[in-house]
Amino acid sequence: MPIAHPETAGRTITTDVPARLDRLPWSRWHWSVVIGLGTVWILDGMEVTIVGNIAGRLSESGSGLPITSGEVTGVAAALYVAGACSGALFWGRLTDIHGRKKLFLITLAVYLGATALTSLAFDTWWFFLFRFLTGFGIGGEYAAINSAIDELIPAHYRGRVNLVINGSYWLGAVGGALLSIVALNTSIFPANVGWRLTFALGAVLALVILLVRRHVPESPRWLLIHGRDAEAERLVRGIEQRVEAETGKPLPRAGDEMTIRQRRRTTFTEIARTVFAEYRKRSALGFSLFIGQAFLYNAITFGYGAILTQFFDVPSGSTGYYFAVIAVGNFLGPLLLGKLFDTVGRRIMISGTYLLSGLLLFGTARLFDQGSLSATTLTACWSAVLFFASAGASSAYLTVSEVFPMETRAMAIAFFYAIGTAAGGITGPLIFAGLTGSGKVGDAVLAFQIGAGLMCAAGIVAVFLAVNAERRSLEDIAAPLSAAASRVPLGGRDA
Image (tube, rainbow, N blue to C red; front, side):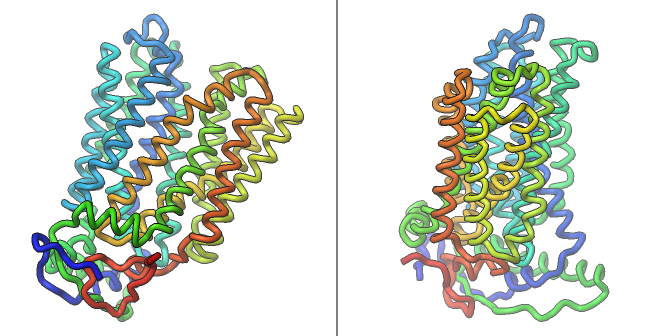
């Protein structure tokens, strides 16, 4: 059992708050949490898609911005990725120290302000700066939101809720693809206005979400560990009263209590030792899942437009429609398969979605190599691949947010998110841009095979290392570092 640092040692308390949260039935209060926290991924999907689709328009004369298409998809995209990675690590640490609520309000405010200021860009350096800051806010959102969701949602529903929320990114991608078609239509908006309106709309939507999010409470689990157990008790009692009033019947008795030694913060040394020594197999699992999905997605989405235009003569202005179809398939995967992660189980579903999506992409590569596909059938194949891959990719976020101790949760999410985002941001331009943009069938096939191979490799890792976390409390999956004594098993350590 870890020993609390002298600066962080506090009272020892026994509590049943985590068990009381996990035994709650689904209610309107849980819906308010989902809406307040989960809808931000729609903004992220819309943001990334819009920037990709407006690259050509921004580089045209009359756009009001002296920038080239290559600078939009190259420099600006790289800065957004750099911002997201650094933001995840920066805000992730603060989320573990200062709480989930304070940070998920601050990070959304950063995103809102940066997006609004992007719409006012008058020079290239301004556009670059606020693309970085937009990513900086979004990166922090991943750590704060995923940790809060897992700690507020009952164990029986945690898997499906987490998957659907992370998968909602693709609803934003659909909206971004369709919105860019309208915004870039010069018969509706002038060339120097339409692209600005898309960013302004993102800021307006973020403001609406921020107003809703104010009512989402702090995580009671975080409050307990940081010496605010009386506040946690009042909060949970209020939630229970609301749920009982909604259902019209008393709640069942909670399960096990646990005893914790309260602390103010956890040191970097403790975090590193926990994640990379005591839970090293789980770290290897998280690394594999994030790298696998990053390569598969880059193999398809980074060059989908070039493939459609070069091999199937699809007009560049129409590729947004095809992307919208792909994005729908991405969202339907977590939506329709999410429940199975809570019933069939994590190990089977994580490994299954990774392996199946990889094998389907291998099959797509073979059909493409044989010249058996049209633009429509290739898009259908991509949609089938990403239906399973999206559920798998979302489960990567679920995995790293639930298999590490409470005190390291936000930082663990941030670390693995940064790995996956950096891998995608680096491998996309360096590997897949050349392969999918060369105009050679063999190069595009190789891109597909690289993505498929790494996705399958991650699926094999999951067969052996995935944690059976379905319907288990977070404290059972990984006991808090502050646990002093508990009837909850100190489960899950690798060593």
